[in-house]
Image (cartoon, rainbow over all chains, first blue to last red; front, side, top):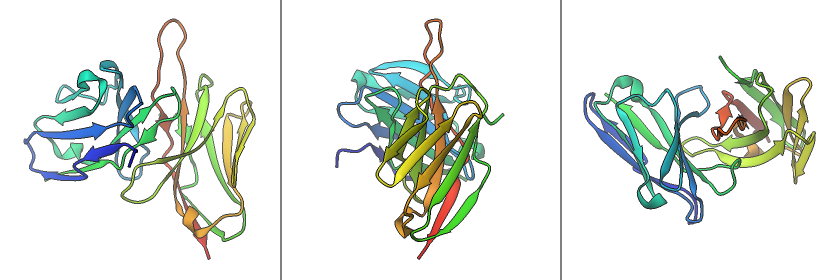
Length: 112
Length: 117
C-alpha cells in the first residue's frame, strides 16, 4: 500500500489528557498537511510542512497543538490537555505537486 | 465566512443518469479548484481538478466546468453508478503574490450524492 497512512485510526481519551497522532506520507511527497474535519463540515486546514520545515499554521492551531516532521518523513500532531471541542477527524495529506493533495484515512478523536 | 459554498447538502439521482454537483466561491484569487469524494470512515479521495485558466476538464465519466465570471464550478458525472454514492467536496486553493504562498485547500461543506439502482 503506497498511500498516506495514519495511526491510530480511532482514539478515545479523557479531557485533560495528551494525545499524539502519526502520519506517514506517500514516500516521494515532500509536502505534508494536517486538516481537521467536524461533523457536517469540510476539512479545515491546520498546518503545512515542506520537507521538515513548518511553513504555515492556521489560527485553529492553538498553543495546545504542536506538529513536527523530523527529517522530512513522517509527521506527528500532538494535542495537549485535550478538550471536548477537540473531538474531530484529524486528516493528514501529502503532495508532490502544489495543488493535488492525497489524504490518509484519518484519525477519529473522541474526548470524553 | 464560507469562501467555498456547496448549497445542496444532498442530491439523489437514478443510475445511468447525469449527476450535477455545484459549487460557488467568493474569493476571486483562487487559482485552482479540486473535487474530492469521501466515503464514510475514509479520507477524501482526489477526483479531478481544474486550473482557473481553463473552463473545462474531463476525465472519463467526470467533467468539471468552471465559470470564472460567475465564480461557479460544477462536477458532472455521466453515467452515474451506485458506487458513486458518497459525499463530494469542492475545494479551492490560491497563491498569494508578494513573496508569500498559500497552499491550503479551502473546502465546501460537501454534497451527499445518492445514486439509486
